[in-house]
Image (cartoon, rainbow, N blue to C red):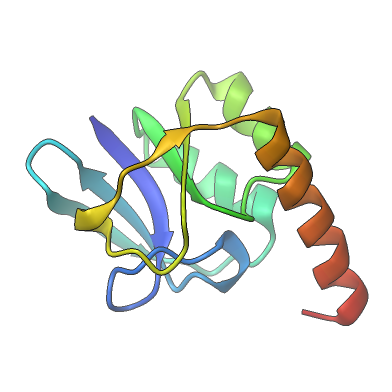
Length: 117
């Protein structure tokens, strides 16, 4: 399965607003397929950019998938996975998204806007 996720320059998962790279990753072969510089810092815009890369799934590091991002990903038909930030892409063990994760990410997004993240 080809997965789109967001990482730093060492390929460690980073939440959407902090990520330096968008990465297409083949989880079966455990290899990076394509890397694109991330120029967006809003969760929904990063989600849209990931979808443009045509993955089979989006791996949203925990705290990345606010409600608008969730709706965008759900409408696109891709599978939505979650894993913890700072894990290397070749060490992931993701799980399917839950509404609890969407609520958590939405609250985090609001908090980060208030404090000027």
